[in-house]
Image (cartoon, rainbow, N blue to C red; front, top):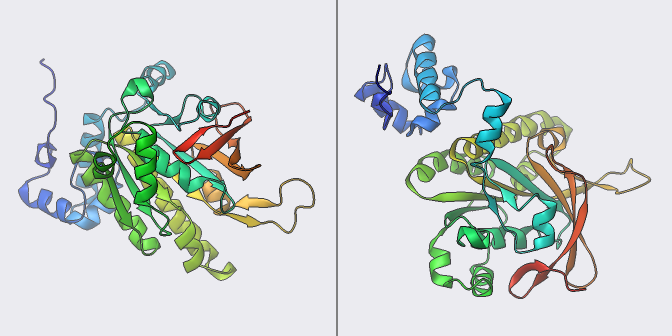
Length: 319
């Protein structure tokens, strides 16, 4: 038997004719990757298919993308395709195991002014650097839920790493998310955009702001956590399927029940805390210095380091 012919579009999937493909595209399932990470019930509903047929289509898409049970050695080999994006600080890169990783979600959380948005801006610039300088020669998507994105800062940071500021800005796709449902809809659209463009970084600044504002109080907690959980799974699927780095920022809230230690906690509770990835807490230090501490990362040791935010971006702190 010869090698399997690679699948190029939806109609290559068994059971997907032009009419079914059109319905899938209209519902946002524009690529084989998007179909592979769907559930049978989702596909059945949007394409008016029997559950059995939807299941077969998804299985074919997953087989085409090599999404299957694997051994640990397979995972080791696959880990070699993961790439790292430099933060601009060697100390912070070392803390993160070499930089911000693709196929993963990295969360930076902390109080106002701790450097969360500065790091997001810097990474959107640095992902465009050559690989030998800590970049991926790729583009970024910046989902701005709080109106904190500043092109002026991108310009300064581009000068700081020796890149053409206008070209850097052309390679950052920015969208202002106006509420939580819009934020989730934007992420759904990314399946289509990433398939077309060389995107290796997705920033969500901030992850929880809209959810917290729109679902206040205990009576709304279940709905908020359910939507937030779905949103995180959207981002996880994109990170895994397209080998991109996902960076999210998060706010903190006071914990009145804590009398010793840090009296703040990241917003989002167990849903965010249990999402796979790397969680980094940021704190202010003297002057332009910031402290980063690994709070949770399955593959990294606990630790903390100091970095600085200068005129030209994120750098190592001077002694």
